[in-house]
Length: 165
Image (cartoon, rainbow, N blue to C red; front, side, top):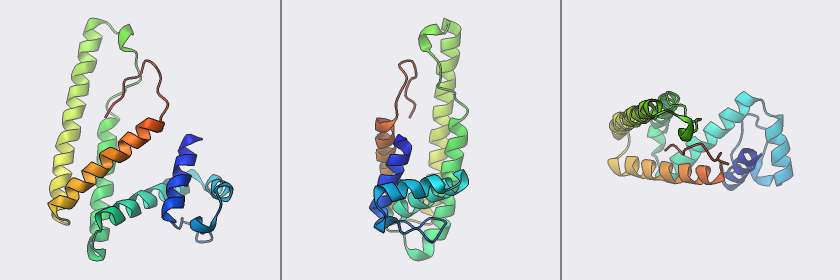
């Protein structure tokens, strides 16, 4: 429910058009937007969120129109790669219930996944700099961190689940 409300707020702020062209998100009241989003298939919702995220990034970074498609491809590839690396670490565990050996192994695994994420970020920063200036790559990563923090503020956490960044 919170995810839907968050997405509604984001969509209303930027007035995106979804896959279905009959929605004018800016002119819809919150109840209508909620109904419209609920009527979308999971694939359409994901596409809408991806489109919103990409438009927000493009606007925030002021990407030249001629570079938008190439940058979007690299950015989406980067996000998918980061997601794949993050999936290698299951953070749904209670550290207090782990033996010393299990905890050491889990800690080592978290360091390894963290290093892979950092290496991947460096790799894609280099790729992005072939399309946009370094200052915009830096701004992207800065904005990404702020968005992640906002999402984490809204996420309910279990008492035993450590927060992963």
